[in-house]
Amino acid sequence: MVVDYQDFAAKALRDETLTRSECQAVLDTPDEQLLGLLQAAFTVRSRYFGKTVRLQMLQNAKSGACQEDCHYCSQSAISTAPIERYNLLLQKEMIDGARQAAASKAQRYCIVISGRSPLDREIDEIAGAVRSIKQEIPIQICCSLGLMNEQQAKRLKAAGVDRVNHNLNTSEAFHTSICTTHTFQDRLSTIRNARAAGLEICSGGIVGMGEKDEDLIDLAMALIEVKPDSIPLNTLHPATGTPLESCDNLTPQRCLKVLCLFRFLHPRTELRVAGGREHNLRSLQPLALYPADSIFVNGYLTTPGQPAPEVWGMIEDLGFKIEVDYQQPVAG
Image (tube, rainbow, N blue to C red; front, side, top):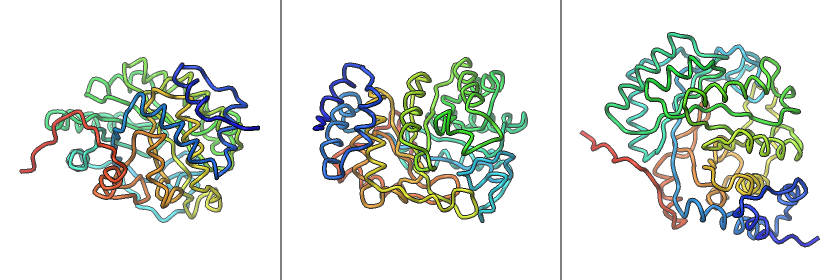
């Protein structure tokens, strides 16, 4: 069977959803046809995002001591990974992080905490930090705080938070294979609560946890129903001391095919190359920006990443351009 990947691009540009067999054909792309697939994905990406790239920076504002058993996470209750463990950062440290994000040309600064759900006092502290940040830097703020009810989400919105991240992570069918302490439906409930509070939604998943192709397709289809404003696509960077520590079988080509699939199914949505990029894409990292239009700088929660100046250089070498819609603060 000869596949014309530009047919998939044409469907995406008509806002038509690929069939499951077409999705499977994307994942089955022979490596020697990968450039043709990337070109088709870029046809879609360039229609809605041109050659612009938006950067995002994470702040691990509370590390470890989580009650959940997420098998992929070095901060989970069942992990013995040698990570830093600390309580919620001081507001000053969160504000300093926002300054660093702005200096890194990030469009968005994401405050992340470990744990099942945020405590009231943690929401108060984060809200206070966000108010201060917004007075000084007009950077967009995203928060990833675990399971939340609508009232908690409304408090974040009132403080000036723009967006909440809550990933679906994988398909509903595979979810119990990676976590038993909360359900796929719990995750959907948090997304509904955040949207009801008027917050934008960032929701994506993790590739490479032992899932099947049908799980990846299910995840991409479930996100069509969620309609997130951005989709972070993580690729597993297995951490020693976690149940998935030996699950390290992704190739750069596989990662690129999955990114192309998500671009075809979400043509108008910000698509971010997220955690695990450096570990799994390696020297092919620049090619990820043909389907994706967003990228992280300066590392992740418990793993280091590419420093901002290196990311800037990669983007410039591609002939692409960093897009930031606010004025960078002048260093004092």
